[in-house]
Image (cartoon, rainbow, N blue to C red):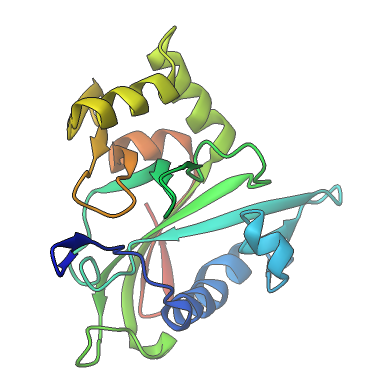
Amino acid sequence: MRNNNKLVSNRKNDTKQEKVLNDYLFKNYFKPLNPTSQLVFDKDLQIAGVDVEITTKNGEKKYIDIKAQSSKKYVNNPKPTYILELSSLNRHGDDFVGWFLNEELITDYYTFVWIPKAKVNEKLEIVSPDDIEEVEVMTVNKSTLKKYILSILGDRNIQDIVAQMRKNELTKLPLTNGIHFSHTPTLFEKPVNLVVKKHILKKFAINHYYIKQGKLIKI
């Protein structure tokens, strides 16, 4: 959005909304499927891309990053896609690597979340986990998804594509059927992302459920 003719950031630190959704998912998705699941509150782990920790049968820790369409724009109006963050600019104009390319993150799986039905307040925010009525949840293997996208790119370098789109102010660049690069030069961060359709993500899903009135329905 614009303020006094200057570009400003659209990002908001809505930790309250995030907590509401995470509490809902823990109770209705993670814990029923894996009793060892634990919500992560350690700041260092959260910065490292971890929202949920699970322990496998052999005692190995696995880390999950929750990616939800939880903004007021998408609650009750989810899109059949998901954005994989590649690059954005900080306030000094320096490149900031997005979570999909950040090698420092220890995430093993992404849990993508769409919210087709929820009660919201006058600010279009979800106030309580009880206000969430229907959710679609898909947990995807990070490694295999990334390898798939890199295989499509071939010899092309993602960072070169990011730089090209910014330099030429390209807003869209197709990669393959169901995946395209997206650049938004009108935003403060001038982000460049990959937009991936749901049917592509599903190829790499280890779990895919619809949750209605607290009941898990396998898709």
